[in-house]
Every structure is written in structure tokens, then in C-alpha cells.
Image (cartoon, rainbow, N blue to C red):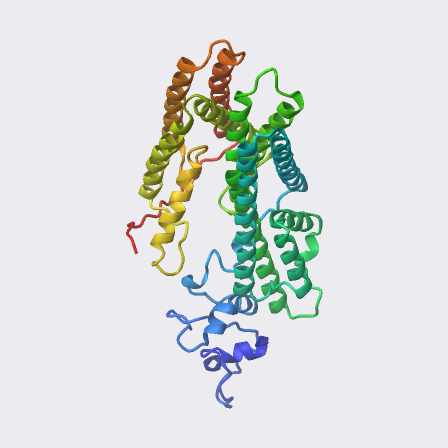
Length: 458
């Protein structure tokens, strides 16, 4: 690594600014410090790529008058000073709430699997266990792959051997998400992890701090994404399954089993609503142009998701109780329409420097379409007023149709015949009210550019 003097001497225009030979007839040249300025065309032609890109921050520190080329300032660059400096780490209360929600969700799911299997409901117990194992396997594999990719792309934020051993142990035990939450909690409690404890130059210290801060932001986003994925793979189907099984219960069943299944459904609903809230708050917190979330905004978001998702899950569970496998054609049709809608938005979920990942983009759009069966995810940084209006209008029409079909076939003698109908629509209406309160008082509308591109297959 070049030091300050060697770096300045490597600049091609530095030598032209040296003092010319002194002559008796010429006035003396001022000895005031002078910072060279880059020519209009930039200096990339003769400098090495390592100096042009890796030492961007170092050059800015040494010569603050240099006009850096615009293409060197990347928003995702680990050496960018503007975007990471505004990053606000998550609060300890949020991380602890995520840990508690995850522990309750996994614990009640495992307990529900045990009581169902002990009761002789082998199929229900197998489905519940399959949802837990599938979500755990997918999230741990993806988390470990992201850690490996972060290690390869980072120069300064490199984990040591023992840290990798701990990571692998946690992921082998299917506790990768727990490890990430503990890492976030450590970053909240120990804010001095960015400080340089070694005797480096100012250039090296600044570059190391920016690289570690950028890696912290990336891991924060990855943790929120993994929590959201885990909730959609485990909590969402588990919620529908437990409500479906509870609808088949009678007064002759054991009350302990009913209580355990009710706790499992409640924890799944809480985990699903909280993971979506944390994901949205993380996106707002890690982007400089967005308003940082406050306690009131988080509470309104959580209640909004809790009511709308609960209404949707009850509708699907009650419809499945009477019409059984007819749920699959309905979900496939809804998924197809939502996937086409997401593709029409021309998203860039898998965008990179090359434009040859359109098939991956389509795959991500299809995964997002599956999530749209339960909840709407905004996949582009643009106003969502009309999107939410269209989505909730479609969901309300579907809920009305499904609940009408269930009400016509369901036995009127069951105790929840009328209460379930009232609960579904009142919960949905309450969620819409909470959403309006959130966007009316806790959300700032931002004008952002809508980046479009033509969608084509690779």
C-alpha cells in the first residue's frame, strides 16, 4: 500500500507542479502548500486501477481539492463516505424483540409438532415439521453463502479463523439466524468495533472504518431479509395449518392440545408481522434518503401487518376446511397474476454490473409472487399509494368470495360460524385503518426516480 508521499508522486500531474529551477531574474515562488487538482479528463488513463478505485478515500483525504470522477463514487462502494455515515444501527430493543419472536415461533412450532404426533395426527405433525425444517435449511444455507461472498468481496472487513469456526458451528446446528441476531446485538452494545486499534496512517484507518461500516450495513440488510424469508417459509404456512387444524377441533379434544396449537398460531402471526416490520424499518434505516423509523411508526406498521395478515390467514384456513384441495388452484391463480404484476414493474432484484441475469430476475419475481398470497412487498423504490390500493382491493374481493363460499357450506351449529365472519372483516378493516394512520402521520413521501429496463429472457 502506498503511503501519502508515494501516492502523491504517482500522480502524473504532480511532477508538472514542482518548482521550476530558480533564476536570479525570476521572482521567488511562494512556498505555501499547494494541492494538485485533477485535469478535466480525469487521471484514470495513467494511474493504476488499484489507485483509481481502492485508494479513492485516501486520495480524497490527502488532496481534498481533487475533483474525483463521478463514476468513481458508487453508492455501494465500501469506501464511500456519504452513504454509510448516515447509517443508524438497530436498537437493542428491536434486536431483542426479534430474538424473542424467533424463539417463541420455533419453540411453539416444535411443541405443536410433538403434541400432534403424540395425539396420532401424523399427517399434520409431518407437515408442521416439514415447514420448520425447510425454512431452517434454506435460511442457513443462504446465510452461510452470503457470509462467504462477503468475505470474498471485502478487503478490510475479513473475519478471523475462530470467528468462522463459530459461524460454521451455528449454521450446522441450524441456528444461523440466531447468530446473526447476536452479531447485531453485539454491534449495538459495542459501538467501538469500528475503531482502529492498530497504529495505521489516517488513510488506512479511514478506509478500514468505511469498509467495516459498509459490511455492517450489508449484514444488517441480509439479516432482515433472512428473517423475512424465514417467516414466509415457516410462519406463514404454519399459521394457516394451525388455524385449519383448530377449525376441525371439537369439545371432545384435549384442551392442552388446543392451547398449544393456539399458541403456535399466535406466535407465527407475531413473527410474520414483526419480520415484515423489521424488514421495512431496515430498508428505511440503511438508505440515506429515507426517513428513519420511530417507535410510533413501528407500532403502526406492526398492527397494520398483524391485522391484515391475520384476516388473510383465517380466510384461507376456513376456506380450506370446507373445500380442501381447491385452495391450490386459487393460490396458483393468485400467484400467477401477482408474478406477472411484479415482472411488469421491471424490478432489479438481481441487478449487477452485467446485464445477463434476467433468468434469476424472473426466479426472484416468482418467489415474490408467492409471498403476495399473504402480503404485499414493495420491490421498487417508488410511491406505493396506488400499488397498495390495487393489492388490497384484490385481496378484499378474494376474501369476500372465499368467506361467502365458506359461510354457505359451513355447519351453522359450530360456535365460530358468525364470530369468524365478523373477525375476518373487522381485522382487515382495522389493518387498513392502521395503514392509513401510518402513511398519514409517520411516513414521508419521497420522490424517487423510477429506473426501468426492458425485461427479456437470457
